[in-house]
Image 1: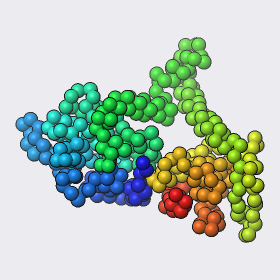
Image 2 (image 1 turned 180 degrees about the vertical axis):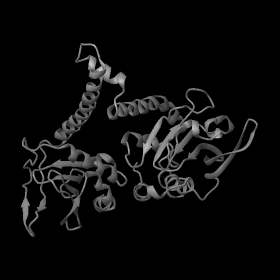
Image 3 (image 1 turned 90 degrees about the horizontal axis):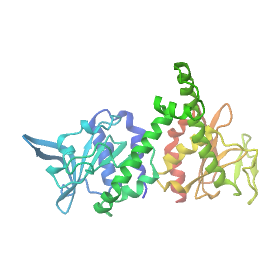
Image 4 (image 1 turned 90 degrees about the vertical axis):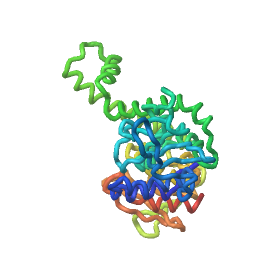
Length: 358
């Protein structure tokens, strides 16, 4: 399963302009329901907007959308403005209490991020934590098989519910690890510091180890990425033409000749750039088809590990950074970048390159 390009493209290009909840519904939520989940948003027997349900003494309580199959409500979808936090306590009451419908799946979304809930902890009451998290600008490939189960074509409620408990905890722990790596808590710092420092933890040492742990976490992640890249790239040759800064100059590498030797070191910026390209290209093809090859001249990103299918080239190990975009004749146009994240500004050209080969 892949996330369709038009949905993620709208989020990437128009996200800042979606300043209301209604704009988010129109530009992001409905396209996702239609193009990714596969439901007909113009058929009220499949997607019913402003679904009304009475909860206790409150009458006329509404949820933004109900998704139905065979006349039965299967999923409730509650929408927030893009950028808004997805807090279950801020969702409407019918959304949080399943007993007013037959639904077993609740979806809370701000257009970019999608959280899927069920009622594992207490029957008929939505769990506090989602069992599935999806970010359209940073798609987790492990989430896609589970997302497939709630699409119209392959809806499988029993399979979703049987896997939901483990998914919920795996998803939550991954999020917690990410938070600790980005901003280590005092408990996390103390835990790791105790493994290398056996003296009392003074305030000064706590401050010192806060920076040490944060730096060590970043280096650990980079080492894991580099190790995986080395494993993938080791022993692979590349046969590509590289256009240098001088017109009509070409450098040709022979097939079977490894271009990533011991003297080539993949940098953090190259890994960051590669991950951005993957995040963009995953709207077109499965993420595992996007492969990197580091060379002396540039950091190449290919489709299917095939040098005849170059997606782009990253020139990041210099004062002036560039992204190299290739046309149908594989002629490279180098575009200056102020920062690595500027790669997102060329998302459509990257997707066009992927579409040429898939």
